[in-house]
Length: 179
Length: 180
Image 1 (cartoon, rainbow over the protein chains, first blue to last red):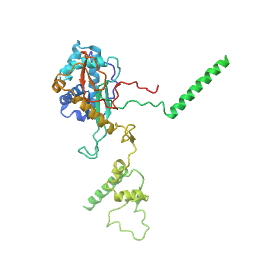
Image 2: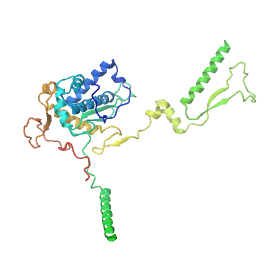
Image 3: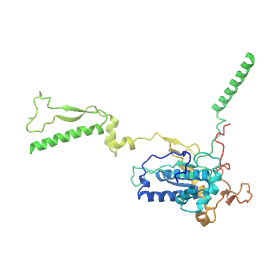
């Protein structure tokens, strides 16, 4: 596996303590990541605790990056897929759905947004539990961040456009007179 | 015995002074040397009492606000700055106008999206296929008022017997800059 390499991942690496993911040792940590990975690849939009899900995000990115680079005829890649993806029908999905979908996209293939905090729901009242929603990009579900707005008809933008036009016209006229 | 107690007392006062720097970072408390003010007539004899050379007293008068907070709040003053102060990092959602924290997404808008997503998932009829033998094509959800797609093998078409919501745009990947 040492010969496998990808570009630097374009996701934020969480520097928080990884205590939530190392409760039962490394094997338990791997089991947890595997379960979240399977959920993410199957449903394409999941919610959960920020520590675990932000960690898992990097694994998903790396797996898709490797699948794009090496394809499904590569031994090391398939070993990694076999290890990290517990449900074997999802390995097919990675190569047949995600690789063509992200063939032209560069950079992160997942989105993560922080959900509103529910105060007082945690067992310790003054502590807050930050959950996030993690999703694959270009999924068929409605967008979480609303569609970009059209700000061109706001008064300041209209005035700025007019000023820009005037400036360009004046510049053209001055060039003509100089010649 | 007495010497032992006095030594213990000195140790405790030293510790108190040492840690008071952390509790009261602002210089509201000062150190008074009572032994130096021996010129006063009513001064206790040093033999019967332990040497109270150092005491903590208030240097500045606390403001009215601070006194009232201390008197009426349930929280201790150490927690007031973290929990008892009004929040400044709240934003108003541009879509629906509800308030949410700066770093999070709007909860009211997300509820609507979550319900729609769940109903789209529910409209996938074969649950066993979804959970154990996932379709190996792109899943496309088609509403009643959408254009009918040709049934080729590259896409898995799921029909939803409803009309597309007005807020759910058909173009899922719009250009980022729409002002031009």
